[in-house]
Length: 260
Image (cartoon, rainbow, N blue to C red):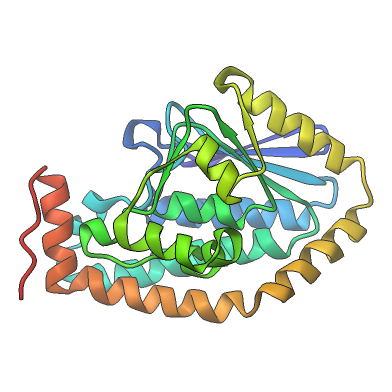
């Protein structure tokens, strides 16, 4: 399978999924959310795929949501964000529930929903030059992609709150220290290291790994219902005055002037 915004390549029993909007820093729009869900369905249904690697084309992993695409929706932004997050969240739930272990190979920057894609992965390898930032409140929005659910469980509540409220940027080494990623690799070796790890897992017992994944996932709590709350929150903010001002200010490269 090959879609324009998410490429799927099989290397033996490993599927390599590549977010493929490099000219837009692999930002997520509705098309990419749909393509990511389609890719997740392929990986979930094909039992010959025993491990998955998720990475980004070009210099960045994923800069989060496509803000310009949101603005282009005009008055329909609420419905647009609800539809986008419906597909994105369905993909995340599938990746977390499928038998095949999912490994994020984080090149460049992961921001916003890109951090959610890292957090939802079972394991994550970061390039030494990778950076991580939530960025939502910087544009008047709230977290989606499972970030507000998964980050506190990965890095702790206080650290997650710091990332959410201050938009602090983490280096790869800090992300390793905080527990957001498992390994740091030299930039040139990132994908090879992630695929080697995936091949090791792919040689293991598929159903056993899948059950282990789901047991750990169940210990985290009710992911899907929490992502429904995220979807409602970001859609409402995106259509509201703060979100509109924050997004316009970001695109116009100026400081936002939020209404009282």
